Length: 278
Image 1: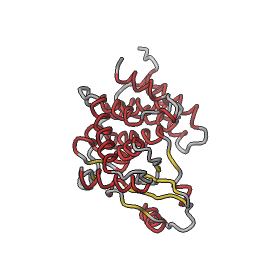
Image 2 (image 1 turned 30 degrees about the vertical axis):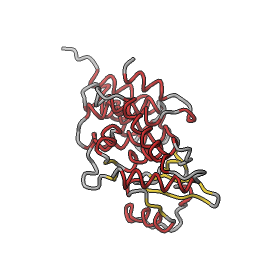
Image 3 (image 1 turned 180 degrees about the vertical axis):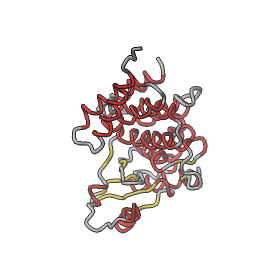
Image 4 (image 1 turned 135 degrees about the vertical axis):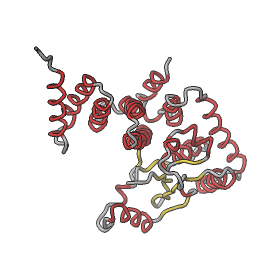
């Protein structure tokens, strides 16, 4: 079975059994076909076993959290790639495990996967501009940033981060809503959308198409990604495939702001596709 067929099979699994790390590594095989997914999953298992061996008897969730941070960031030196943030390798889980460098979202995937192996009920947070992780506790939650070595963030820290985005005021923003849990499929989709945008900016449309194909296996009704794939296919001189995606986008999009623009592109492609008579 091909990598993409395997990915498609896992992509439709329910949240309770969705294999986040396995799916991320299967995607990575589309760029690095010789990697062994099972070998990389075994690395996560090994880290979890190592942490478990350091835990006291009857370890609490906070004990596990401290041990996770100590093992991952101090003993094993994982860290955020601040010096080369936009390196595409930061979005491939195998390379992140090899180099111990990654983005907020890829480091969070590793963090979550190890935590789950320790029965630590962490959840991903699709926070604007920077993926985070949380541990639900009796009186609320502990918000954690794996990109910065597992530091915890309070409400003031989070408001400052929101304010720094486009210099917008944080007053009146519902921080609690922004801290809602993201499901596993949503985590993987966000990771892939980051990479798709990076490849589009670099005009690497062949790789952008591969990423977009995987996103649409996860979320086939995503209007945004149908549109983006149409734009990518047009750049790759695949007008018939682009037309199909534009039509599907318009059927899905409803009142999206750029429907008129895509309608114009669709009509222009249709005109180009008409036969010319001499």
